[in-house]
Amino acid sequence: MPEIGEVARVVHYIRKHLVGRTIASCVAYPDDIVYGKVGCTAEAFQQHVSGRRVVGADRQGKYFYMLFDKPPHAVCHFGMTGWMKFDGEETAYYKKAVVDDDLKKEREEWPPKYMKFLLKCGEEKVDGQVREAVEAAFVDPRRLARIRLVDCAAEEIRKASPLKENGPDPVRDREVVTVEWLAALLRRKRVPVKALLLDQANISGVGNWVADEVLYQARIHPEQYSNTFNDGQIEQLHKALMDVCTLAVETNADSSQFPETWLMKYRWNKGKKDSNVLPSGEKIVHLKVGGRTSAIVPSVQKKTAAVAGDVESEELEDGEAKPARTRKRKAKTAVKDDEEDEAEVEEEAVAKKGRGGKRTKAGLDPGEEIKPAARKGRVNNAAAGRVKDERNDVQANRGAEDDDNESETPPSKAVKGKRAAPKKSASKAAEKPATPGSRRSTRAKAS
Image (cartoon, one colour):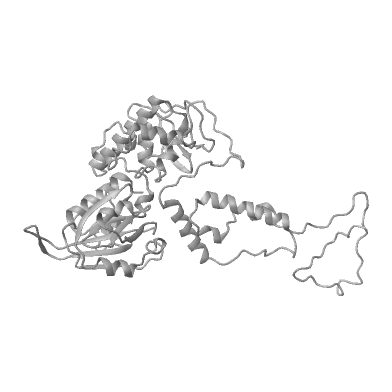
């Protein structure tokens, strides 16, 4: 997922190629998720953006926006796989060591696949200089991005939704994100510290790799509760947060400019033997906190106080036993990472609608109870479309199913100590067939 540095990279290219230019045409492609989930439509976007002049571009956390010569303005979020491409320049923030023919063809293809909108600017003179024609495309294969129009004055854009609901940006709002501010935030909550950093309502722009890098440099375990740190640890965390975010933005997420000592350079080889090590020889392990995979260096990131009980580790510190997985141990804290989790729930709900309607009790005798194993994983489809954390939805729905099970009529039982005689019938041919709503049993009713 594009994080604070990657979004800054896109803003860099928008400023380079689009700011000061007139959008000769905008073609927006209908998508009831990318546009519709935030109250916009492709038709409205196309109508309002065509003919507008781009007067500015900036970002807050993982959101970026384009300001036009008059409202409304475009505010976008990449989700997991969104990106902006330009026909005259490669904008990807990482390069694969080996580029096969298919990938090369995809990169050279224009217009690109999975477009949500395509902007075209003709040749024109800007500030006395002739600018060549350019095209820019917003792409998103997984449809987890969000594109909307915000009708407000350009200078008020950060005071309007959705930006106003997000926390301060560590780079743009460094006068807000002070050591004292961070200490107050940490101590008024009791959640795993990584979950707190990923929650965009707390701090804008921190994603998975940035959070891992910050915690590694601060020598803090990601699972430790946020209200358990002393003043020295909070100062370390603040310094790491500001340093990592600032360098990511200043370099436009160009990892070749990151220090060789950064964890980010070596964290991507999960599951590969002899690959998860730093140049110093220190081992990198992967575990899950709040449902997200975390890369940590156990020899550096020690647990110094109470930790959350939702850790799932593939490999812990040497000699440390892997905790037994039980049904009772649930994640106490759900990571609120922008619209990512809710978008995935929404996407899954849409996919399920096309696979059929309600589940039926096929293959069961009328009135027979469904065993717990048959109900495992069942999710209320109506709840799936709501803006909730997926894990909480499943947990709530399971509780509802338990209530349903309790309300079903239990099978009749014989009174203890008495054996009932089997029910006699004239013949099998004369036996009355079972009908829905009735129940036939070989057991006799209690006398």
